[in-house]
Image (cartoon, rainbow, N blue to C red; front, side, top):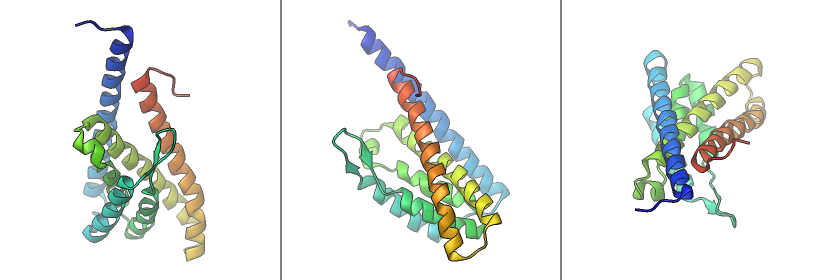
Length: 179
């Protein structure tokens, strides 16, 4: 078998990405489990409803001309952050977000690295979002308008954390810098 430097680099990048995906995915599962054990266990009904909406939205993404796919899964995830905040169960929002990893093409291809990466990145980003929301909600009044307004900076936090994790994954898989 003849390999080129590009093939070797691609294999090395794929291994790095899968290792990163495994680490991120396992970290998210451990954190969500610990939160359930030491804190409030999320209610099953909202988990199923919001988790189903996230999985559905993730599989109904829109493909852009450059091949990037965008989905609306952050909308039910943000709603879950608010609902599970009211229940005192941030693990609920994490688990809901992790349902975004139920992306049918990745599951069909048995791309475990990609599935684990998405579960971990969505889950960990949503944990940061939940903590940010809780911090801002603690200093805001509890009116619907105040809670709605604090979702704007919280959504920015979600974008930044998620983009950082994706940038690391892309850098590892393509052998480029995170920037």
